[in-house]
Amino acid sequence: MAVSDAKRTSPNLDAAPAEGVPVLELRGVRKAFGGAQALAGVDFTLRTGEVHAVVGMNGAGKSTLVELICGTFPQDGGDIVIDGRRQGPLTPRRAHAAGVSIVHQRRTLVGELSVAENLLLGRLPTRAGRVLWRRAREEAAAALADLGLDVAPGAPARSLDPGAQTLVEIAREVHHGGRVLVLDEPTAALGARDAERVHGLVRTLRDRGTAIIYISHHLDEVLSLADRVTVMRDGRVAAVEDRTALDLPALVRAMVGDRLVRGGRPETARRPGAVALTLSELAGGRLRPFDLEIRAGEVVAVLGPAGDGQSELFGLLSGLRRARSGTVAVRGSVLRSGSVTAALGAGLRCVTGDRLSYGLVPGLGVDENLDLVRRGRQRPWLVRWRDVHARARSSRERYGVTTIQDDPPVAALSGGNQQKVLLSAWLDGDVAACLLEEPTSGVDVAAKADIHRIVDGLAARGTAVLLTSSDIDEVIRLADRVVVVRGGRAVADLPMDHVSRDDLGTLIAGGDQP
Image (cartoon, rainbow, N blue to C red; front, side, top):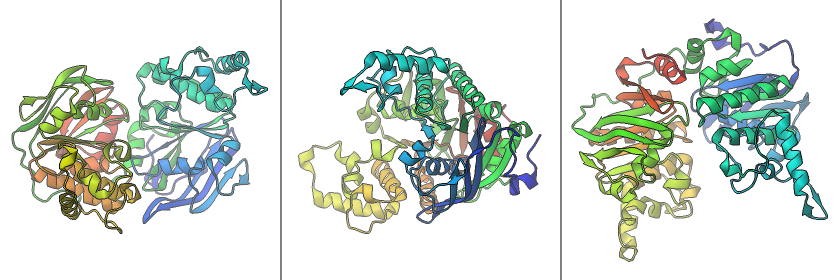
């Protein structure tokens, strides 16, 4: 059954299973960052013994909603109610004390410690200042067995497969008293078998009365697991539905809306030139043998569920990782696999989606960061600082980087200005081809528009652009072609003018090619 237009515009916030009582309520919650409204009067109810999925496109407000519930930062307005009691400003400690726990997409187990040590981290049994190891192993074994998990308490966490690591993380939060469990993309980087193990544990916890908020881009598992689904769009609740009232097309429509917005694309159609970037049978990590050609002046987007193979492209193209098989060629010249120097020398630039961890040096000034790539290929004693500052001034003007001070640490900039510094540092000069990984992640609306214009400029200069983005609107805005990856393989390669938002959402979720 499809979601009606009336329900999408006026969500039924009281729809819920008959069983269960409210354990968590959000009433008119608001949150803004600078001038960007992340949450605009959100109402949300979670009941005991239910899996309540929260879905939406990138930037819809899901992450902000979760961070408020877990106390990472306070709301600007509205109320958070736990067990019928209105809460003051939540902190992670206060949220945890109230029984709210989160399992993040990025696993947090300490690899060198045992499963038991990870499960009881911070709560190991002691006597006279000494850890009671036997008791710790017994307690961990009992906690795992209680949830039906066949995991050895004494095994090092690093020895577990990804699915088992996720299960241990969930078990840890439950053992520490989590009654409200937030699962943030728990199966994003898992194969089908491991994902089903996680699904089984989720069902077990629900049957025991645990209240679960489930965040996922995999809409098929949402429709399989959830009791209710809240759809978010642009910081608001677009729909709240019982899962039985939804099918895949209806859920996609609720997420993306009914309009196909193509505004902002370049007025002049791009005219791609010769092939500039070729991936032939490229494989590594979760990426299966993958073929792709991108021409000079063409923008090709790779789109798929988080962790489903496209995330491997950064390491393989940049030279940070050696490919398991296959080749990368720039303008017909095959690159040496696993060599950053070879990639840079061929004019291939890979811009990370994690700017402060891998793309910039947060403690250095803007000017030094802008000169990092160029300077990294020179002898350090040849640096002429007057030239560095002059080049930086020119780069800041071209890329629209604004700063209050003359040359502040890059960590002091807004997310949008940090991203512009990153793009300028890596894309200035003669760039034959580039990979842009989530280029507008964590930036405001104005910066996003500026970055889109930067990508247009790259294509106009003849650069072959490979874009990996989880934002369908961004893909529609920028790409000439879209390649959809599922299970580590390309399942569709379509020209952008022959595909709609609904088509893309359906393909990502597991539907057939239009």
